[in-house]
Length: 108
View 1 (cartoon, rainbow, N blue to C red):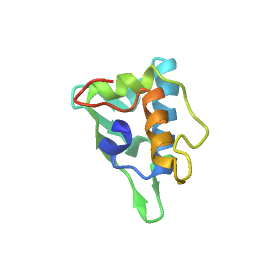
View 2: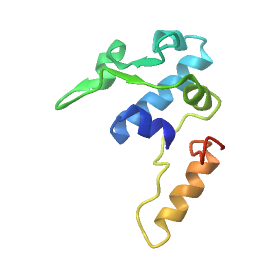
View 3: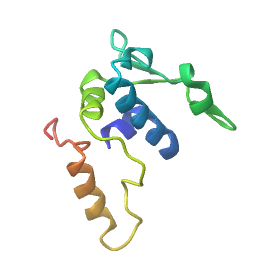
């Protein structure tokens, strides 16, 4: 949730960004996307993924701690947020915690 909230990306771009971070980190090429000295994800370097239609994501300011949490997690190809139902919010929170994306007062 922290990553999604900080980037301000739409869900589709959030998934792409997450997987791109995991993939590039695994290839030791994360610096092509994330500039640690400025704490910025440079989406514009991947125009075909982030620049389209009415939504254009150029950069997102993301603290290193959050990027490191993403790099230590798995890539994802499915919706990590369950559809709304009576228990939807509880499931969202449990899923968020299980992926290591949620914090309360800075504690995971």
